Image 1: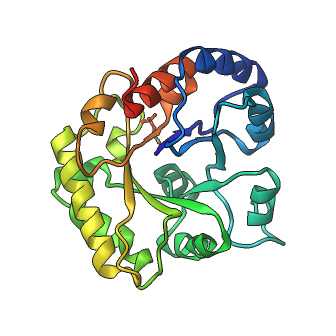
Image 2: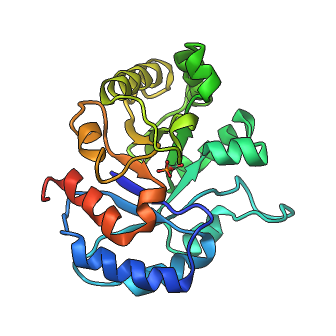
Length: 245
Ligand code: PGA
């Protein structure tokens, strides 16, 4: 599973270029869950620009609200479905840190898993927590929202150390593998369904380091920010994941 997170980037002009670059480099694969989450306003424009019979691409949003109505600035599940989006990120560290999203908000949004939305829950420790060897404790706390829930195939976790996002720094691939194994164990023992979720790695993934992460047993794909803004780089990473480079 490979997901592009465009954050608050992009324009129609950028999308025009991106599509040309992506199509020129990408080697299609039927097996892969390949998703792109642009800004809400660009979802339909991107989907129209990319349309082609041999491309199976899912579109998604970077956030969704748990209900509709008097919630200024929010986007509801029905609106997400109206845009033909299949997935949403939830709990990205930028939503937690800039907009004050809490585990309680996130827990409410997880109900959307049962309403046909593919959900990618983002978790990760800060630099300080990492330096103080608190990584596992922090992740365990963030994973509390899953306690007793029935998780299905449409639920995925993205491990994104906050200090690795947009910095060019990453944990080693062995460290990532160990943390992913830990996350899978914690979720399996605390969820209602004993499900083992897919775990993606996110944080400064690029075409040069992606393969080392993909080689690890417990890495089920990647969530890619900066490097996904270039259609050529993003396609190269997807091709590496598909083993067709
Ligand atoms: P990055 O962002 O790839 O630019 O580090 C990843 C993310 O925040 O999802």
